[in-house]
Length: 464
Image (cartoon, rainbow, N blue to C red; front, side, top):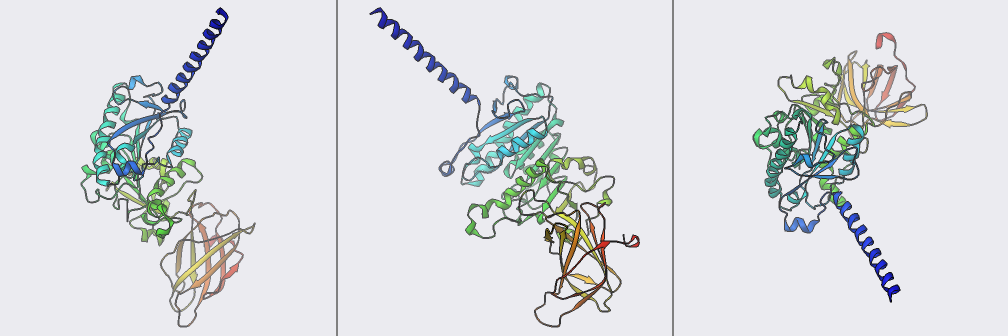
C-alpha cells in the first residue's frame, strides 16, 4: 500500500511539473506580442479603437515588447538615447496584417540601431466605413502623444524621433507633429491618404510644418493618395499616378485596387535594401522632367540630386532653407524590385534642310549580348539643321561596356511619305554615371520605321 502511494506521489509531482512548464511556456509566448490580425468579418462589424505599441530593437528583433502609453520605465528594451522610429499603418479594409510589416522591421534594424515601434491600431482602422477610420486617426495621435511625453520625461529628444506613416498613417504622424509644434525630427509620408483630406487646411492633414523635415512619396494621387505637395520634398514616381507593373484591369482582383497605393511602401523598402540609390530630379512638372529639362544635377552643387526614401534627409539642410519650402521631384521606375532606372541623354545634330519631327526608339547592347530598350515616352522631338536635339531616356539595365546601339526613327503617321533623318553626330551620355565614357557615331542616315544598328566609338574631345 505504501509502495502504491509512493508511485502516486511521484506521478503527481511529474504532472505538476509538466503543468508548470506549460504554464511558463505559455506565459513566455504571451510576452511576444503580435500585430492584431483581423478579418473581413471584423470590418463588417466595425472595430473600436485600441492601440498597441510593439517595440523591436536589435536585442529583441524577433519578439516584440508591448509598451504602455503611461509607463516607459517598465520597458526592458527601450533606450531613449537612441533614435526612435514609429511606423504607423493606415486604413485596413480586410483587417489583415500589412504584408510589408516584417520587411520594414528587419530592414530598418539591420540598417541602424534604433528603437522601432510598430503602431498597431488595426482595431480602429479595420472597417468598411472609411470615415470611421479617419475619425479614429485623431485618437491614435493622442495616444502617441502621451507615450512620447513619457519618453521625453526620461531623457528622449524630439530631434531623435522619426515617424513613418502609410496612407492614413501619414496624417496621424502629421497630427502628432503638430502637437509638438513641428519639432519632431522627421516625418515620412508614404502615399498620404487623399479621400476626406484633399482641400483640408494644414491643421487637418500632414504638412511640411509638422516636423523639422517632411518627405512624401506619392504613387496613387488619382485614387487613394493625396495629389498636392505636403512636405519639404514630395516625390512623384512615374508622375505619381499609374505605376508600372501594376494591373490595368479589374480582372486582376485586389491588386488592381491597391497596387499603385502600396507601391510607395515598396519603393521605401527598396531604399532600405540599398540595391540601387533611386535618383530623383527636382522639377516643376512631370512633363518638364520627361522632356529632360530638369536632369542637370550640377544645378544643386555641392548637393547631388536627391535620392528617394530613407536617405532623403541628406537634403534636409538645403530644403528647409528654400523659398518656397516645398520641392517636387520626379523620376521613373521599372515595374519590379529594385525599381531602378538608369538615365541617359541621347544628343543628335542633324543636317536635313527641312525641319523634322518624330520619335526615336533606342536600344543598347553590351559585350555579352544583353539588350535593353528605352522606356520613357517623351513628346516628339524637333530636329533642325545643325542644332542639337537632346532626348532624355531611361533603361531598366545599365551597361558599363556598350557594344552596339540600335535606333529607329518614326513620325508615327499611318499615311503619307516615309522620311529620312540625316545624322551628323549622335552622342550617348550617362546622367546616372556622368563619369562614364561618352559614346558617339558620325554621319549616318535613319530610314523611317527601319532599325539601324551600329557600333559606337568614344566621342572626340570636341564633342564631349
